[in-house]
Amino acid sequence: MKRAVVVIVFFAALVGIWQVATMSGRWSPVLLPPPRAVGEYLWAALSDGTLVDAAMVTLRRLLIGYAIGLAIGLPLGLAVSTSQYLEDTVGALALGLQTLPSVCWVPLALLWFGQTEAAMLFVVVMGTVWSVVLATSAGARTIPPIYARAARTMGSQGFDKWTRVILPASLPFVVSGMKQGWAFAWRSLMAAEIFVTILTGFGLGHLLQYGRELSAMDQVIGVMVAIVLIGLVADKLLFSPWERFVHRRWGTGLI
Amino acid sequence: MSADQDKPKPDKLLVEGVSKWFRTPRATVQALDDMNLRVTEGEFVCLVGPSGCGKTTLLDIMAGLTRPDEGRVVADGQLVEGPGRHRLVMFQESALFPWLTVFGNVMFGLKRKPGLTNAERRDIADAHLRLVGLEKFKKSFVHELSGGMKQRIALARSLAPDPQVLLMDEPFGALDAITREHLYQDLQQICRERKKTIIFVTHNVREAVCLGDRVFILSPSPGRIREEFRISLPRPRDINSPELAVIAQRITQALKFYLVGSRDAAA
Image 1: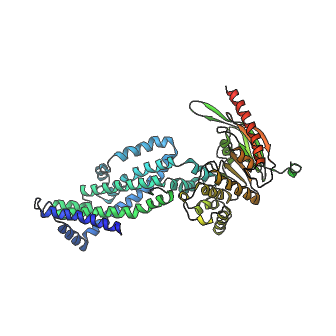
Image 2 (image 1 turned 60 degrees about the vertical axis):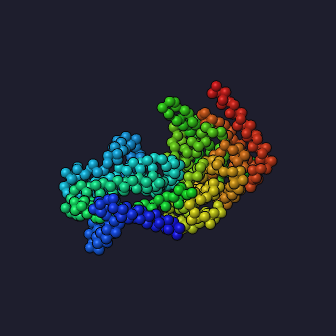
Image 3 (image 1 turned 90 degrees about the horizontal axis):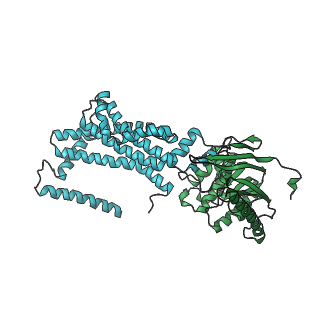
């Protein structure tokens, strides 16, 4: 309860400062619209469905691309952890490509796939996969060897060992890698959507870019607010359960 | 010393001429030198020695986790070629899985044992949690338990799949003295009820005398089995009893003799 009050007061204060800034008259309302104008835009965009439609298009790209990224990244990360050769080759490749800002994949994706969904998915997958590979292989390498030995004596081997021992034992690492992968995927998708018009779907990034072209600052800020909110909700829905799982089971993060 | 010398029981576990070398980039170190050990069914055998005498390596070889460079291990007439659920290991530090509950940990080996229904597995797991007196903690997580409780759960986990041989690698080393004494009592009682064959590795001579039917002393660099002591004290034994202390002192002296010997040999 007390925490909720603190949160509400904090955000109310932010909006209050914004309101005072617009009322001071120092900045043109075209560049700094009052909170009320942004609220009205958000309400209108929600009512006529443009915001929801755009958010659905974007989230669909993100979730599908992210799922593909995980499906590639987790097994690849486990494989990298098993062999020094894979570590030296695929591991080094993953490290290199992870440092490459994933928006750099956009020009290549457009040339390969054209202005299509496939290009967007490709960018999201590239944003996700390398962080997940690195985190998973680091996680699998740092788990106490005693877990694997105990599992072997109890008759766990092969696929069972990987899915029931190595992967769960690496979870503290894997979850943070998945989170980083998500953040990279989200950023690169937004950049791609702002960068190019994709003929197959009109996402949040496009909505934001149109706001700029129309000089509609209420739309620009409104879409940014929507993007932040989606990011927060995704974090709570996708990662908080896993983080709670890790904290409860490993007894970490307790004060 | 007992009736089973007249009618020899079959060998449960046989270690024959096992040697092992560890190769590092700098040097090759011999860890085990021609080790021989014969354990019969239902026996509690303790291996005592200082750190570096290869106790854990020998236990790993018996478990099938490590291969010997020379010699072989035979369990129930079968050559040991890899780990198997007939020989479970209870490890030094707690090897419980933090991502599972206490119950999930005890179930881990059972789930991988064929020929049981899931209801039977759950019943067996519950029975073993009762055996170690921790049935109330079945839903707890590993980090919520004390060190002694963790090792009790580890014991329940290794007993639950009913292994023919239980290999214990200094399981009580990290516990305080009082908790350890409780576990000595528990372990002796469980042994009497379940008639398990146990090979127990420790550096604590008193612990070995308290638990073992036979105690072998090992000397380091390279690890060698030096001498065998048959302990005929009545059970249950109290680790603080004076009779036990006398035997432990004799074994300690023997151990020191071999230690000095191996140091001189090295120098």
